[in-house]
Amino acid sequence: MNRFLSLFDTLNCIIFGNGVTDFLSYFIIDIEVYMELAGDIVKKKFIMMILLSSLLTPVFALDEAIYSKEMLNEELLKIDNQYTFSNHDQIKENLLSIINEKIDDSIEKDITCSLDYCNLVLKYKNISSDEKRIEIHYYDSKEEDTTSEENIEIEKKSSITYQSHVQDIGWQNVVGDGDLSGTEHQSKRLEAIKIFLTGNIDGSIEYSSHVQDIGWQNYVGNGILSGTEHQSKRLEAIKIRLVGDVSNYYDIYYRVHIEDFGWLGWTKNGEAAGSQGLGKRLESIQIKLVEKNDTSISTDEKSFVIKNTTIQYQVHGQDYGTQEEVLEGNIAGTTGKSKRVEAFQIHFNTSLNGNIIYNSFVEGKGWEEEDIEDHSFSGTMGQAKAIQLIRISLTDEIAEEYDIYYRVHSANYGWLGWAKNGEIAGVNHYSIEAIQIKLFFKKDSNKNQLPTKNHYIEKVSYKPVYYNQKDARWNRVYYGKYPFGSTGCAPTSMAMAFQGILGRTILPTDVANYLYSQTNEFNKRTQGSSGQAIVKAAEYYGVKRTAIESKEELIEALKDGKIVFAAMGNGRFGKKKYNHAIIFYGYNSKKNTTNVMDPLQVKNNTATSIDLIWREQSTDPDDYSGGSNFHSLERY
Image: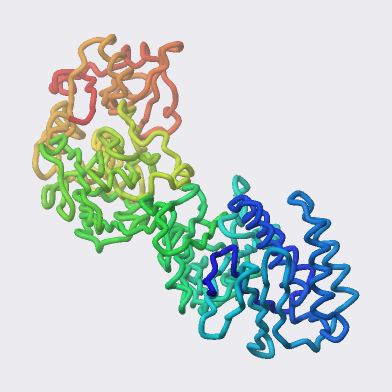
């Protein structure tokens, strides 16, 4: 009675005209794999079926008139007797010799060969002009051949091969099931791929690539190029799927090695592998064809990385109010206009668990008592209070996946370095004028290109801005009976100091307008300013003022980075007829000097001896009415 046969008993060979040498090489490789799984007698039977199939391949078919059944059987027995399990090359050589002598295209009949231990039946099928099939069936020698089209059981089998086009290399060799295609540790992009499915099961393979500047391409079929050539565009992700009957027998598994992330996890059957929205190149790929219900490959690890979290943010600022939201990486606020940011908010879009939290250090108030969460303003509105420092952080799953980077443009300092994940950004006592925020995956190396030094400047040496009281914009502006150019040394010195401390534009006429219109300390009781002018102006502008009573206190104030306002008498700065106001900042301990800013005589703007300044201070009691001729100035 006929019995249906196992993998080692039945072989279905489909030949597509690749030539006998390629055909034999392919099956000799398969033999080496199967030999590890079978006993000696099964090995010999299986080898004989392979050899017989090779002899009768329709591309090089034997002429039955020349090569009879008996002759065929005799030759096969010779090969069988010569065969040893370690001599594959000799088998192949013998077969090629026989085939090259006895080939013809005319045979199209079934042949039965009787060996000492088995019967082999070859069923020849002309499937189409491009596809011919030989089915080989094995029976014990005592059994009769009852083979028919209805009771033949053919093993269903398919295999996968693929090749990649690599940057600077071009097309690599075709590799087999599960092998690596591409490169590792060379930073070379995959640019295109071809995938081939072969076997005797109806169906095909389809694949789609996500390409730089293009996005997802349409699916292509078996062996067709996906990606690009000669365009230097990286593959960023891929999807592979089986279609037709083959999908009932196999699952297609694949994983990719991508820039910065390395090997991602395995995925299967049309799911995306790689990344999207990150600009990361594929560097290598592995593909495996796995029988249905085989769970040996785990798909638990992440196989596809997509930036599914985005941020938008906006600021409320001096004079311009609330700006429109900007996308990640763009500037919110202004630069080069000396406009303070007074409030900001961040809008976070994500599918992950967690939140974004942020806080502001507000001028004259300090840090907010509680952190602010997504889509709420931090800071103040309508109070003319600048934000001086910020910090931003992520929580929960978002914090596990991403790093948040941010930097600020501070008055008098410009752009600082990038802070991250809750670090402080800004300069103590200086207004923030603009903000930038960026979001990076933990493994994204692009963040390493961002300069992170000096994102926070804690100890401040104030930098005053120079104005001259005889500037054409205000030289001939009168306050009472007197022109500003002749009497405006004190308001000009205060404006230079206040702007350096507060980080926003304060003109000499701004100070003069306040003193003249709201106090009696400028060009009212006397020509010029009284000693009380600095006291009232500092209070009005929110600048901390401290009277200095000794040379030692003066030096300590300068060492701490404070600006000093001084009323000077006769000497380098003042004259017998009038006293003069100046400011100075910084201290050189080796030379015992400080940097002077004289609002009238530019030639005096140089390093000057502390001893000379202290010696030439004003002796006018009215200048001393503020408690001293010297006042240190700083932020609260």
